[in-house]
Length: 268
Ligand code: ATP
Image 1 (cartoon, rainbow, N blue to C red):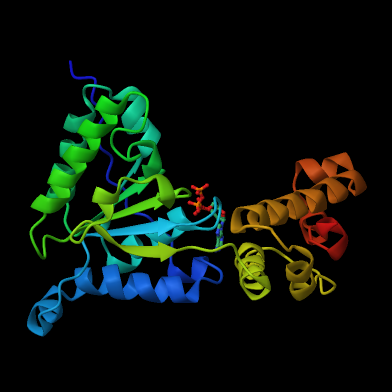
Image 2 (cartoon, rainbow, N blue to C red):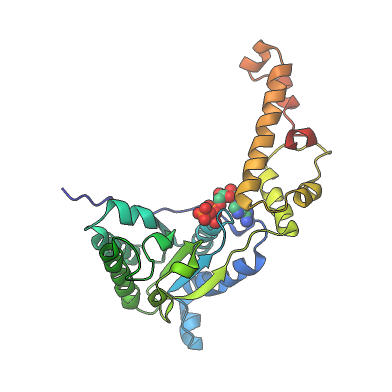
């Protein structure tokens, strides 16, 4: 029996408006990935070659995975996600086979997006890492697969890293990951947009001021803001659970549910 794990094809359900801020990044991904997948004939007619690979780089928790999923959803493409360390640690010896399998599946499922998160784990510059032979072989296989993607194959590779500086330069050559897109930490306006996304389906009291929250969360990433919002909702639940008689709680009465409103205090 093969040790190879099944390559899973997902159909994500993340839309552009689930991502706060990052307007320029979204537009760039629309043009570089979504349009070529949706309108291949137009690109052919115009004589322009879309990128085979896009590298998203920037600090952790800023939405790289979310962006890759949104591109797939909005392009109506299948999504194959793989994490660098998972290829490396579990598939020593089988790693190249796994890469081949991923690309084979993607071609079959085209239009498809292959998302390689934490690509730095498999792609440090050749000859520099410990266990260099493994990473060398994986990189070579990845390069071979990307070079072999014919134009308009309907397969695009999106990779993500916090450490673009340690990537093997061969990966960044034309025809490979030749589009580098910075996914920055959010500024105040972007934080406001992210707060909007994550409180969109919450019952918010009028005293909650998302602008103020955005102002007060300098240095927070999107992931941090998602956690703040989740915690605020839980605070509201804790508060209400304490104030409602047990029977009403158990039957999740109207009274209980009506009291569940997230207030300014819950964000403290
Ligand atoms: P890592 O580098 O740690 O893998 P990442 O950049 O891929 O992080 P994501 O996994 O996309 O970050 O983000 C983690 C979570 O943080 C998301 O599921 C989402 O809830 C929230 N998040 C991050 N950025 C944003 C954003 N711009 N808008 C809305 N939510 C965001």
